[in-house]
Image 1 (cartoon, helix red, strand yellow):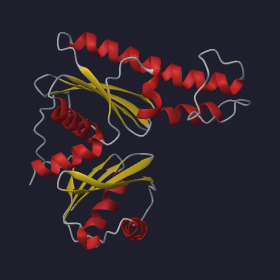
Image 2: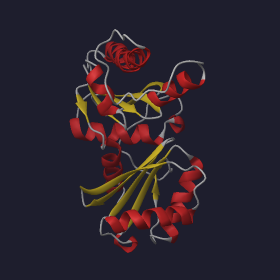
Image 3: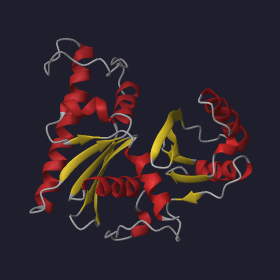
Image 4: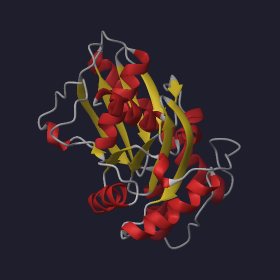
Length: 257
């Protein structure tokens, strides 16, 4: 079995694959100071709940935007799983996707994985929108080339800033949708500003990116922890795939073995 690990700034998404089938997956808060042994304790419990053991894992692949956690996970894979992890971003990794940005070494591991997974699935020009701690827009040509994209603060960053930088505005649960764009109280107004506002930003950027990529007319696919939450407030998202990154990790492991 393959253990695929996507380490984000806020959460880690971990999946176990049997062949190409995702058997189980977990979403865990990123503890940026977690030790190797703490990871072992956490995942021993999660594995047990799914009827798995550490020695069921034969391979590990890791994508990370948090260097300290990447090191801890690599050590965990070696010490407890007895595997040599494949790390996204290593010089030996074969992605099958040319990266046409100014400095290819700058591309975030998760952004490249998403682009590879989306192009493998749709085989056309694409804009991949990942709703994580940051929101990223990644553009892929019809020939399967990574072109670049855009980055903006994510919903959680905006909510935290609104609550901490203002004296009277409360923290709000945006999982409960507003009744309309015109909020008639403070909570409803915040929900409208975040959900309709971010939906409008996503649509605006996708429109501009599509104009620049014309005549390829790219489709758009959304992923990430808040993709299902924000997609209904957009008109430009064609597909939603919350497991896109894990699928991409499985695909890249397959290509490199």
